[in-house]
Length: 539
Image (cartoon, rainbow, N blue to C red; front, side):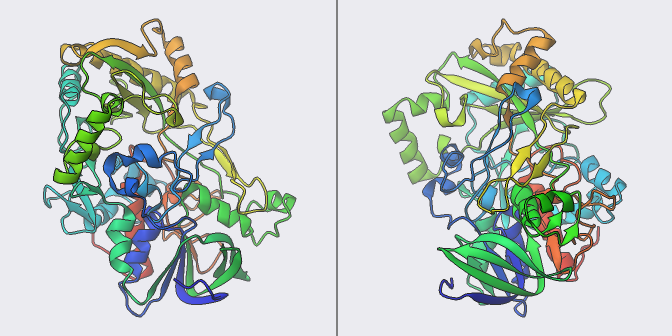
């Protein structure tokens, strides 16, 4: 790492070492003749809690690893702001997320293609999911083996999980062993991004193996301030590190991979966005692109919490020093036990009604329970099911708070603004309750702790969801791909009206996929790397 220089020259500069940035840096630096510089505002991923799977409970609130964003207050969520955890470390949010490997549904990507994005149908992107993947169960028509990203089966199978699955089947949700195969519908255990019971983040999968290459430079604690332009061509990036302002000049391309918050923020700070809004902040517009920061989408979930009849939960472990010692030794000696679990262990993708063609509800069943993240786990034996609509119709907006890169942007997700989102969320809660009434899991339940039996009507359930719901941390869409007037990038992820500038991360998704966003973000970067290198994979 070079700290004492004021100017760096490189072929390609990538801003942001998250899921997409690490993938790009790993792939693009495979070409020995291409020099790549990767900038990351956070630090190295040395914190041990990053690498222990259950460590997300620590990293999700750690300000050294996490931007800890807070949105504007939401009219439809009881006037509350929403906490947004976003990674500020090598690996980005893939270093602090819940480890779930979900691709979404084929129809999600076919819809991208129907919106005019040639090359982004499910048949087009499936080869990139397979290329990225090292699937524990081996390769087949849907899965790959030998790729950088290890995808493993969850080994720790709490009796509560099996009971919940059995009850869901009795309630009419089919059993599945693979949400990422021929059909997403069903209930089963999540697949997770771990290798040998350690987190396999994008930094571990793609960046660490590449860092020994002489053509890859990784600069941490590097806060990007603005993109440099000559006319409408991006020629570099100015960043601040240790109080010093440094310029990195890009001979070929500037790639913005800061994620759905920081990518639009950097474009706006650099003068690319709605010209009138930028002028009001004293930023000279370089290119009037009104869609930057628009089209913000996220998954919003409601939590149904239960008191457990038996001390089988993570809550019980965390209340007992002896139990903590036992599971700590179990992990250190054998790489097994509760420390190996993901944020949710059982998932379901189900339909809110017979009129729905494909699943529009996701379950995230957890063998622990909590309220606010900072408050820690409940002091009783508890478990929970988080439910959310997977294809929200509500759209929000991101804009600048000021012309300073150190000020978090204004984020208004507009959760539950669309009537359809409110309706599907209530149906999801009712379906979860129907599952909980079935004998297998009901035998484990002392009582429904929240919302509690007094909350029973649709209006009461919705009021509870408004007052207590949370972000599932799947923000996308703020630099959307397309050809309409509000699109920011084209189908090769080049910024409209600009040269030498791309955005590659979850912000380019025109619509939110049906599930978790880490695997699709890595797929996007794999595909982008091939486009940048002039390669393609046959569908």
